[in-house]
Every structure is written in structure tokens, then in C-alpha cells.
Length: 202
Image: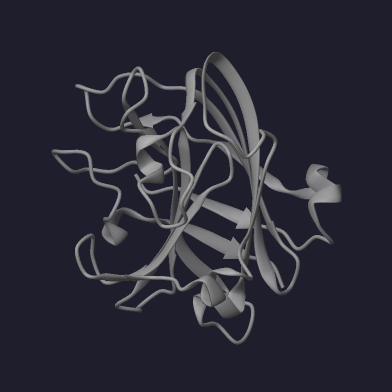
């Protein structure tokens, strides 16, 4: 069953107690049973979506240091979002040291990465230093700010379709967990038909 969450309007990350919160804990594929502890907080400030991820996991790893590189192989959190009825969706992926990938897509294989200029308004702030690492039993947070204009929206939408993920293709153990469940046979986050709903307060 697809999930939904009400997204309140707040002033900023200083008011985290006013954010909506939930966990990323859907294990959709039995061959990848590991489920790290991941809580997210979500709100908007009238011009942008604000998301905080809080992660605790057995292996916190970051190798990728280049924007639009394979951040999904590292300890990575992801936010996929689209406007209802749109043929496009946007994916924002960020490893634990704050290196990001941003793209506009029709599908997993049909996409255009953001240019540095397009990505500049998207703000990522990690609690970890911006350097490669590989540690056991790591804890970290990631703050993500995505302007509505970056999503090609002129006003605050009533509803957005989205899913939030935690993955690590090259971490130990490999894992793929989601907020809203995915009913596909093999691991694939590029499935807008399985996105949940964000209901935004004006």
C-alpha cells in the first residue's frame, strides 16, 4: 500500500520539531534483507522542500567525490519526486559526505543530469567531513533543500508524488530500502508508479 505524509510549512531546519517524520524501512527484495536505521523529517518553507535524513548503519562508506558520479554505490540517501500527471520525475541522490547526483528523467535510462548551474540551488549538508571514508557502525545526517523552481513548479503544489530511499550498492551489506513499498521483482528505485504522496500545507 502506497504511503502518504502531510508536509507542513515551516521557517527552516531550526524548527525540526514542526516537521513531519517517518522511517525508511521497507525491505522490498528478500535477497537484500539488511535494513539500516533511517528516519527522515520533511517540510517546506514556501519556496523549497526541506528533508533531513538521520542514518545509523553498520558500514558507512563514501568513495565517490564527483558530482553526478556513482553515489548510489556509497552510503546513500535518495529523494525521487514528480508532479502528478507529469511524464518526468526528478531524482536527487546524495552520499554520506554530501556528494550529489541530480537528474530529470523519463525513466532509469532516459535522463539528463543537471548542469552545475542547475544544481547550484539544491543544497546538501552532511554531518560528515567531505572526504572519503569507510567506517563501521556509523551515524550521520543529511539536510537536503530542493527549491520548487528546480522541480519546474511556479507555486506550492497541493500534492507531489515521491519516494525516499536508503541504499548502498557497494557497502557491506548491500541494501535497498524505501519509504513507500515497491512491488517489483528486482531492485529498482526508478518506478514512479510506486511513489507515495506528499500532501503540502499552504
